[in-house]
Image (cartoon, rainbow, N blue to C red; front, side, top):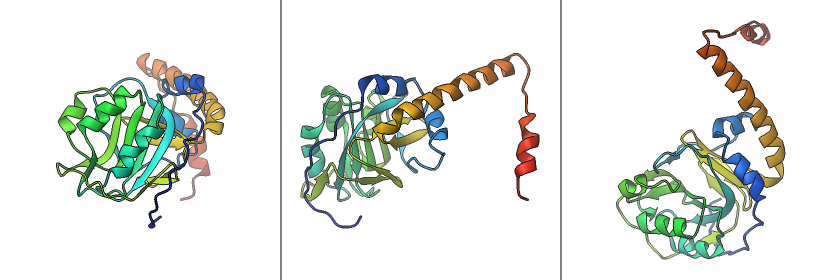
Length: 223
């Protein structure tokens, strides 16, 4: 993914609002455990004020050169309330592509969050708000506006491929994306695991911790 063009493609249909609402109540690790633990981004973190809810929404994607936000600004025209704007800036940290004003604008437009594989700025300001912002790092140096860039194409965010229309989730543990069509099965499995883990925590609070499952795991291990 080294060549850039200027494609601007329509946004994919939004994921079912009821599914998104369910996902907001599930921690990202539980969702990840039920997608084989082999996907998800690496190297990005949350910069906003922590909340108990999981960020969740439909991906509108942008692919741009590091430090350039011309396509990012145009991408807001493709976003609807509840979408997550996912920006692939190649992991570049030399110039921020988004900051306090643009993230405030995203919140005003009703977006569910912003993800940047690149740099942001105004980190202190962003950190005072609950609007979800995930990024690789910060830099006070502002963005260029020269282009090119592409909207609603497949992007790579921290090693995770995000397709337009994917469901994107994020919390303090990290970011994850999966096809909207997979959501019902992933949610059902994650909720079942959540109940199991709640029971385990109750056992621990009661002074019990059953670790007998280790015998079977060690029997299967290859050493």
